[in-house]
Image (cartoon, rainbow, N blue to C red; front, top):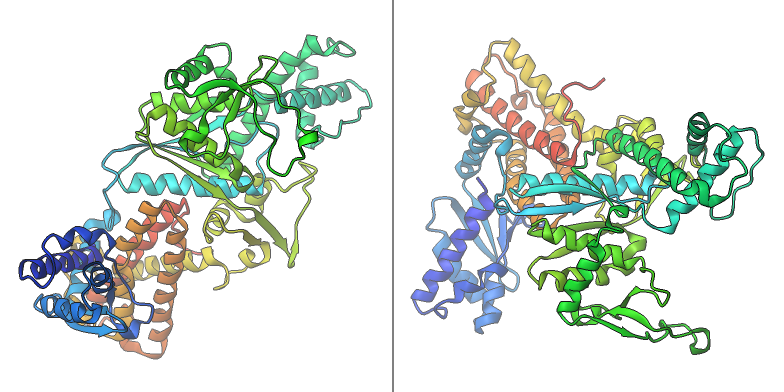
Length: 583
């Protein structure tokens, strides 16, 4: 049950009725997509506010306040609407009857974890590609944010009815894995007693020491002082597999499970790159030419070369993109084209890529190639994840013993736990920079966002356990039959209204691909619950459990349990454990 959606439909019906009466043009209800119904910023203004009169007034030339008054007359006839008020230039504020909110709480109890679930996904197949870090070392803190965001987004879309595939693109075909092989070779030499020095572009982290030792165990001194051509292929494969094992373990520690690991190297020598380019060529999008110098680069510093190019500008890109170099080798973009062609051929209805913010320059070219290869049939959305600044004692944490240059995902999870890591990573919109304060999350206080929400859930579970031990039936079917007219205090209704915002919030979060909205909402809901809890210490009539008032207790337990259902559902979407007890 989504009260906000129900009232929005009521408003659209009222608009259609005004059209039939000649007050508005017939068919004006077709503009309904622009009508919103949401909680007003100031609760004193009512339960819900709609922009319907503002939107339709501009469209029809009708004064918004006049239209708002006409809508108010229609809406006030509905049994769910207690009062209507026109505000400002034409906003319409509504107050619903208390029984309307009570029925929504009963719906939460009868639907359980399905409460508020939007089903607009309708089984559409969505590929969510995220993390996709180069397999050259362990994941770092920024990858942790991309992993938490991508996994929560996949959970959210699945909850909304999509069939979701979580995918990791293994960049094991570029020059970076050759550098990895050479770095592993140095650790191999070191394991054989040699003194080594890493190149400036090498990977000196200690995580390659076990790889070097394993290579020594496997090959002994066989490749010591041998030319690179004899060992690089073996060492590349061995080191890449070792790094992917580490990455899988890191993701598992964060609670992330990938459905598919797709290897870039698997595209080479299989005609899959050529097949993708033939598809583009059949559409007239491949040609041989020379590119102009990049913006900001002096003409004299640029040497134009004949290259094979993709007409990406015909699909929204800024410049055409090279796919084959003048020496005949592929550019880095060619396997990206083949990879996305493979996604399209696998039958996905929608693609979502989660990139680090430093990959913003890739957005237009990837959109262009998906649009070209699918004939505009398959949408792709690219989400950019901003950087994370890790703080300790108010100062940035810069170094890691394991990597030598960055703090790893695993070190962060080992320090504060997967639940804390995931929740904090989702407390800001993905494209906004994030400060992760280690001291803040070590303290069990209101300033610790995940503790504050989990503590609310634990308190609810404690109330239900005590009530069950006292002889109350705390099963959802029994609580759904409670007489909710026994709850009517403003503090109780503040919590009821907040719980009933959950379906609207879920719909918005899923449609906009914004799981951070759930973290925000859970923090607000937990705050409303804690406020009622603290107030009940001074006002005994607000306490959830009162032996002398069994009917009132059942009603309050119903509200308590509905709150717990929402908190649990929200935390599960974020991939965070809804704990029953705090230690």
